[in-house]
Length: 342
Image (cartoon, rainbow, N blue to C red):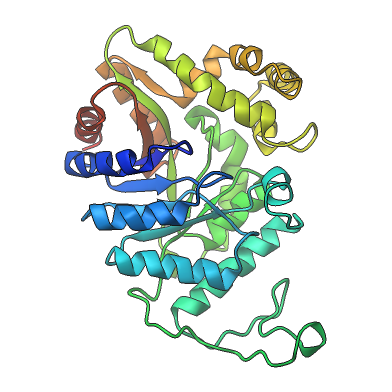
């Protein structure tokens, strides 16, 4: 099992990158950089590449609508070159709220679009002349443009002809696609005890179609971590995050995270959180997040308990434990988790 951590959406990027130097020494394997509708992820990824030596640097996530497939491939290849082969391309469909609201791009056909983005990226990295016929047509047909487009191949030589691609997926069809074609899976709000019942069929269906050349799917999941007695109250710090996603990321009837909470068995609570959040009552929404959900998503408590939670994640199929250390000494927490994993 590898160990990863995700940088926050909020500011302090330079400080976070500086901290990664210590986390790298403590045994962190991967740093994930978020984007959403804050600062772009790629700028920070390049900065991290210059500050670190060993850790892998992943986008978690770049949405597939606001950049063309070729630009996503160029971007990943650029970070890979800066980091001497340490880049991971994490992509996802995001949702209409961000894609249409922030980027002004129509949100449609996310599963097929994800598949084609991956196909095109891999062609770019292999330096094939870029031709594609689907949702993306390359070169652009003459009736849609000037007719001067040519099937080009990447001008520069990537450090690697294959850069690992991770998909952030929650819905059955997208999870099935992930298990079929991706190198890794980035679920969110992951409850290990519920993983098999919620995603087992989709993972099995995708794995049945998976090429042996891809190797096993890397599953990246975890949560807040704090090790010690009497720290259970720290779980409440995750309440605003869960409320944002379950309540505010989307609209009534179209919120992937709310759907997930319902699939976990929290139908009534999911409705209440969403109603409160969309009515502007964010604090009340956070208070409505059930303690059982918070506990199952986190690794907070005495050392023995945290070890049990790690094993629960491992037994559910997680191969990269993704943690957010709490407390004044994140490096010490990472070092301790590293010892538990090893």
